[in-house]
Length: 93
Image 1 (cartoon, helix red, strand yellow):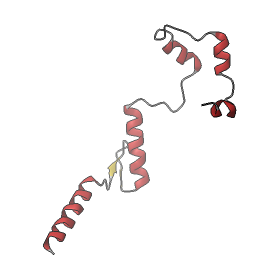
Image 2 (spheres, one colour; image 1 turned 135 degrees about the vertical axis):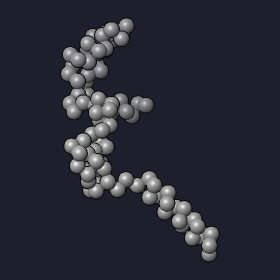
Image 3 (tube, one colour; image 1 turned 180 degrees about the vertical axis):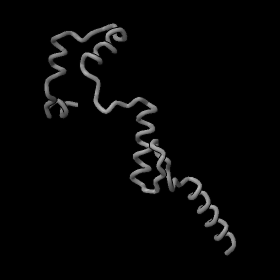
Image 4 (spheres, one colour; image 1 turned 90 degrees about the horizontal axis):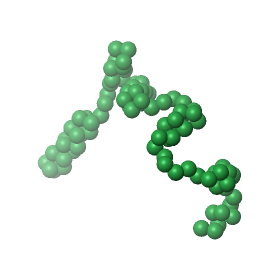
């Protein structure tokens, strides 16, 4: 009846208000294609949060962590942490 149509219209309006049908890219072009819309969002947020395409080097990590970490792992434990994990270690838990 009438309530069903009202609900259907309300849901349709809500869906349309949250659906992005086109986007203007940084180059100024407008695109209606979903892959272009997704790429524009990914690039926007990667730039916004300064997400790098490659991980930081070991030197960069050490320079970042050195002033922030007060304790270090002893060498004998460090070597153990770099070894592969064996299935027996999982089974002990």
